[in-house]
Amino acid sequence: MTASELVQRLQREFGLDAAIIATTDGLVVEAAQGTSEIDCEAVAAQAVSGLLMLEALGQELSSTPRQAIVEFDRHLVLVAPLDPDTALVLLASGATNLGRLRLAVRRFIPLFQQLISEQGS
Image 1 (cartoon, rainbow, N blue to C red):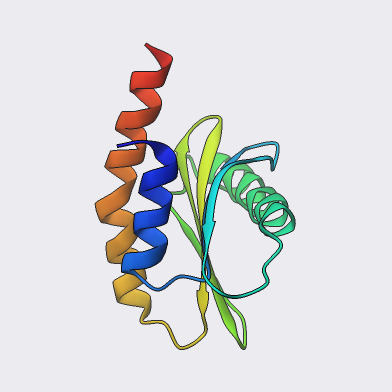
Image 2 (image 1 turned 120 degrees about the vertical axis):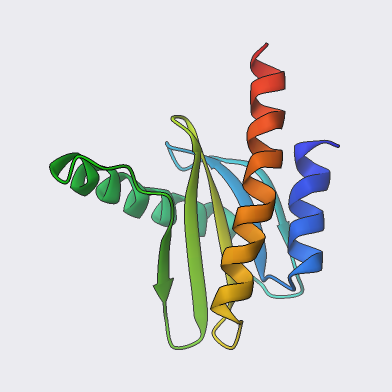
């Protein structure tokens, strides 16, 4: 399965507004979005910027962030590092079940990481 197929599957199965793989520079590598008019490039850039801030906080705590979840009045954003250079950004409606979203991440991150390691080999 390709990264493109995987983000499409993740977006579709969990009814996300968008599922994005982005570099830590904020550039979109792959994206799949639902019917909403979301600017995936802008969301990815801002979300990854927030993740970098959390990584700096993690250094102070001698810990590594596994994921960051931000709840807005109409959206949820979940960002999780895949490797030192890429991150997964999920955008969902504010009514989305947070536990189900975390389950999606737990299920799909190993698949993305496997793809990344295969591409690096």
